[in-house]
Image 1: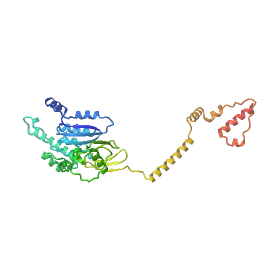
Image 2: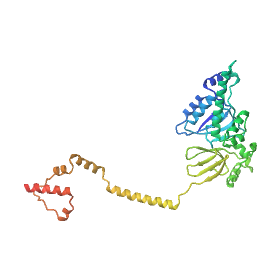
Image 3: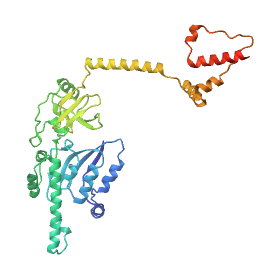
Image 4: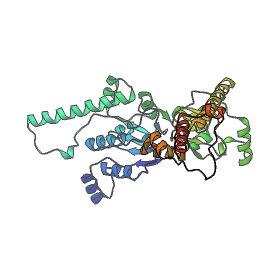
Length: 375
């Protein structure tokens, strides 16, 4: 999985270079994303975007959004800090089920505007109408995307955009901008309650695993158990991240992203709200299915043997083809050898043998007998 970090504002290439020159602060432009996508190996089918971005250029943001959607890669996004303005558009480049927020991440959606420092000294009425129409079109375009990709109501989103204030991670989840809130591993082992986040589903962790971890750590409390991330590859090439120290994934492990994942061994892992809630083993074939498959295999083996018995070897085919090209049976009858060893008389075939002669053999024998009789 390729990791793309967007930790700066969004700007076109010219503005990026000027800002970098004068302030030393970098930005993210379309060219950066294009070069990143070009560097990904062909067999790497997924991109995980880590985001802490205040937004920026509307046109550049839309271009990056289209580029990511057109990459042919499976995209997931984790918001690690601020996701504001056009950064929310990049967030929605990931499909539902692939958008995650950390507990303290914040979100901001607003109507597009023209910064005061870019305005000229004077505008005519017609100039202002053109600017207003353009801004309204950009606002409508943003709303269309938000409604399509989040499922939230247009009127509610429009009202929030007019407020121009930051949303909490819980509000972003309610509106559908993100699908789950990922509790970091340190939060899990210390049992902190970030902003009142509680698991809605109660799950059971195997007690043997807990005993094993506690014994290894030398503590009687689960707070001090070190947890690391394990990245598991699914059957379709996606990556499932599970937080545990060692061993196989268990129900109750913190994991991301949410969804249902089929593993290479055929088992299925279900993650809901950042926690593994189910692990289902691979389905086994029934005895009836096995018997049916074995019967079909037997039929195919019989058909194969019959086909082999009727098949001609490559040498046979070459000889038959050569005879056919030379003139077939007529040529063969005319040109076959009639030489006999001197002093040896032609013997009459037994009737049983004659009855078994093929038409070609019979014709060849009669021709030989006629030539012998003439001598």
